[in-house]
Image (cartoon, rainbow, N blue to C red):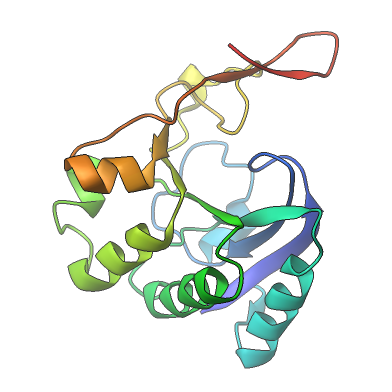
Length: 187
């Protein structure tokens, strides 16, 4: 797997200060994607043991709320082995921190149904996540007032509750940016 960038003080892709890993490789090719260069699986830097060490070190300060995985597409079959290894290590070293993952796949239609290459790896990744933001970015549904997602079709999913119940459970609370104030409010 390659990755495009690691942001060590990200406040846009989940609550609090987060470490965000933007992986390379995506076949969704959403129109007007904010990260088109990361569609290419060869874009960026190879993901190595040193990369994992860097991410774990960046997660260690107490003020860091957790890890966010974005893309590209974390659930592309080529990316699954490294994503699985990373989330297991983060869960092991930092059980108190949250792991968010953004995907163009949908939880029920694609990830839980086994439509991806390795249903076992996908299931293990999902079991390590606190939150999954699913669904392709759809430009006609773009809403700049939304927080933690780009278009209104995307779901913010509570993964532990979803896996327990066997169906998608939205994360309690909905966040919107208060226009003009820059504040993020739960509504």
